[in-house]
Image (cartoon, rainbow over the protein chains, first blue to last red):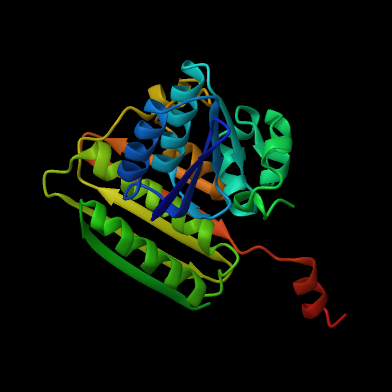
Length: 126
Length: 144
């Protein structure tokens, strides 16, 4: 698994690419620990490139949510994979997490789209 | 009706989970459970993960058996560990914020039927998944 991290306008965008499971959770935790230490306004957890999640991965996402919110940071999720959304619904995370189908809507929800919209990094806004 | 079966004895290690994942996916797809393969695989993996994390069997082994017969696939995960108190687990209300304890919740949500028998001699998790019949399949079968 690869984890991409970018920071703009006080928001860290964390994008796990591949499987978030019992094997890859330790790496994910390490990355989140670093992001948490560097936390400004909040975190955008982009799960659009995550292909698989198990209960360990779910636990790590909840842990991240708790860490960020306990520091008064904002955290939003991007998820458009129906397979993973099904797992989220099973464990009722869809009721807890703020989930958006794309980056554009996630940015709009945190009220920073204006600052991002012309950036090359966010050129895939739909 | 023909029955297809596969049995695997796996050491209790994370490595076994990956092996089990691919074998389950392969078996399910090969025997006509393409649409259900992802659900079955994750459920099997969660059951095996519970053995690794909680059962601690003295022989350090876990057993995975899969049977496909007609439109039903059965997955059985067993171990000779110390078992656990299922009643206490099932009675506990689960909050979405809980950091663990989601394995059984996921298994029950993904499979059509899940039975768990656990005592001091070990645990057997038996899960069934029925083949999903889509409307298009029904139309094809009826020649419509």
